[in-house]
Length: 110
Image 1 (cartoon, rainbow, N blue to C red):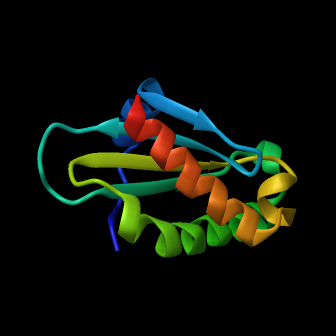
Image 2: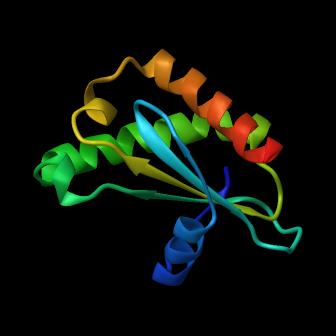
C-alpha cells in the first residue's frame, strides 16, 4: 500500500500538476522526481456534505485506492483523490474502480 500524504504542501503541489476528472472523483497526480514508492492522499470538501458524508466518501476512496493502485501506481508519483458532491458516496463501486484505472492510464500517458 502506498504511503499517505499528510502535508498541505504535498496536496497543493498535486493540485498544480496533472488532473483527470471522472464522474465519481477527481484524480490529481504529479511526478516527484525521486524513485521512492508512490504516495496517495484523499480530500473531500464541505460541499460534499456533513462530516458523516465526507468520512464515508473518504472511506470509499481509500478502498478504491487499495484495490486499484498496487498494480497501476508508479514509483516517484503523488496521487490525490478528491471526492465529488453526491456521486462519490452513491456511485457504483465497480464503475469507480474502472474509472480510477482509466484515469491513471490517462495521467501516465500525458
